[in-house]
Every structure is written in C-alpha cells, then in structure tokens.
Length: 265
Image (cartoon, rainbow, N blue to C red):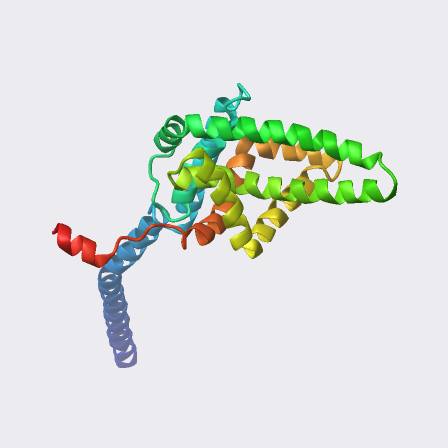
C-alpha cells in the first residue's frame, strides 16, 4: 500500500512536472510568435511594396512598352495621308530622343506637339527626299542595264550619290526634332553630321539593315514582322536608334556658358 502510494505520488509529481513544462513551452512559443510576428508583417509589407512600386524594373519595363505601343499607334495614324510621313517621323523622334534620357513624361502630348511644330519643315524635307529617291531609283535601274566602262562609272557614281542620300535621310528627321534651323541648313548639317560621325553613321546603317533583313528574311518572318511593325515596330526602332542619335548630337548641342548665367542673374 505504501509502495502504491509512493508510486501514485511520484506519478502525480511527474504529471505536474510535465504539465508545467508543457505550459512553459506553450507560453514561450506564444511569446516567440508575438515577438516575431511584427517583423514578418514588415517583411511581407516590404515585399508587397516592392512588387507594386512603380519605380521597380518590371513596372518601368511595362510602362515603356505601353509608351511604345501608344507612340506606334500615333505614328501610323498620322502617316495615313502619306504626305505627312515626314512630320510623323519627326514627331516620333521628338519623343524618343527625350525618352532615352527620361525627359518626356507625356507621350501623346509630346508627339502631337512635335508633329504640329515641325510639320512644315518635315513635310518639305519628306517631299524632297521622296522626289530625289524616285529619281535615284530610276537611275539605278538604268545603270544596271548599261555595259562597258561608261556603265561602270555611271553605276559607281549613282551608288555613291545614293549612299549620301541615305545618310541625309537617316539624320534629317531626328535633326529637325532636336534642332531649329532653316531648310538649307537642315540638309547641309544632316550631311555634315553624317560625315563627321561616320562610325555612328555606319552603326545606324547596320541597325536599319538588320531590321530590314529580319523583316524580309522569309514569308513566315514577314507575317511575324508585320504584327511587330503594327504593334511597336516603328517606335521601337526610333527608340533604339535614339541612343545613337543622342551620342551624335551631344557635341552639336548648344551649351550655355556660366558667365552668361551670372550676367543674367
């Protein structure tokens, strides 16, 4: 009987011990959870904040794609009359030349402003390029049918003139979008800039040639390329080449001298 009482007492003591120990672990676990819960909430809030932060890489990329889609749509709509293609190219570059430096925030407003302000000069430049391009196309077709020494000399001359023509055509609309000048100065400066920045000119030739090659590589590629051109093709090309144009134009941009600012103050 004594044995049983001691055993029962021992069991009771053990039972009380384990109950207290279990309660202790529960209490400590609750304290730990309470202590760490705010930190986890802060971490979750930081994660959600970074996810929906408009300054993160994903949102900036999506925003840029949306801007290019809007620009491309405006370019296509404003180019429908054909005569206004020059003004559309200038308006497109007036936005993308600023966008590559994050200087443009209102895409549609900037495009329409550039279209309106540069309409006259861009249209004249486009019609001149269109006329000269048509004449050069006829001359090249004619030169291909010639034989002998005269045919070779005439062909080389026409191809050289065509190269100069393409060089002016590549620079003229971005130049109008970036600088103010007379029509005579526009054509002259487009030629001089193309020659003076010849490595960048060759790079621009390469980019445009690559785009044309990919577009007309095959019938299947043309179908895919058409969808691309309708969505973001023209604005994407202008955006990519604007990085090159900014590097070219930076040495021709007028920089205000500090002395002039001091005198005005």
